[in-house]
Image: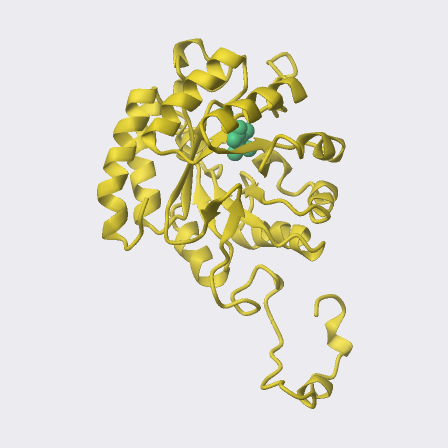
Length: 297
Ligand code: PEP
Ligand code: MN
């Protein structure tokens, strides 16, 4: 029961047949909490299970630029073992003069590449009006860091029945992040994947500061799958691989990584995008690390 529960007398429920115990969830986050659901949630997107034994890698370009770029990148990351193809069609750019994304035309390319290489797709939704048009092409809807507290958008995503990848806001506490997830779940959509992507700190040598500690903290208090994005966290491709190793070692259920078939020419986030060869090497490294923490990849 969620809502104004102070007025409820728990004894009324204890009298029902089959009720062993009535527990009041004292945390402000309820549906996201282990108190409400003890066992880990496994979320399935086009046959790919996130939160299960297998660590899932999502990879692809920052933004969808054209068919050649998406297909080339998808071909390479799929061959290395990525199961989910990423690519933005609606881009939250810091400058209004920067490329804003291809919209639905881009999503059609993403879907076609996903089908070709047998991958699920993930792409960012920025506003309510985009949701319906995205559903035919996207298996996971991403809420970006800048929209983590766009409560109207979160509530609208609670009304659909498709997984939502909720990125951590760049200044959000873990509790605020869980309450954002709660907005989606309160609408009845329980398919939420949390994604740590770095927070703003006083540090200037990295784009953001990856909060590795969020992974074990969340794994303890929440049943939701937790993945992390080392690309947006650090902002430089030479640092992405060590962070990716740390994420799986810390118990992350997956990774979201920017890869571009030709990063020098990328329209967006080229400096942090891995070359396909680097991505292949990273996947080989992960195959060694992941079994050491009791998972498969
Ligand atoms: C992205 O994944 O493309 C993105 C914009 O990330 P974030 O919202 O974490 O900045
Ligand atoms: Mn990006």
